[in-house]
Image 1 (cartoon, rainbow, N blue to C red):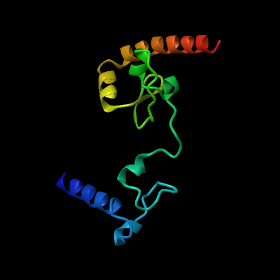
Image 2 (image 1 turned 90 degrees about the horizontal axis):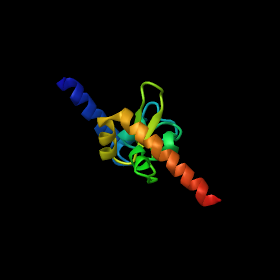
Image 3 (image 1 turned 30 degrees about the horizontal axis):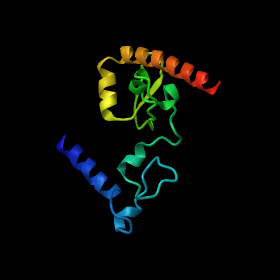
Length: 123
């Protein structure tokens, strides 16, 4: 276990080096087009933007009748249907995960109301 942690820390320090240092020329595997010193988290960024349910709006906001944009960096995929839900904050994700199925149902009802309101406003 200590060896794995030490290896992780060694890798993180190489990836997070300042530009121009001898170690900053290390290429991160699997990241196309990323600068060599992009940081450890850039390796987890998908190659194209993710699209979540409710136009990538936070489901808790949608359930409350608000359009809160989320960039999908915090997300949850429903194991039953594969739907992706994006969150604007860790707090929102944690609250959602207390009762995910009930949260999805509330968000769906809220989304129907928001869409109906939007179509009414444009007429």
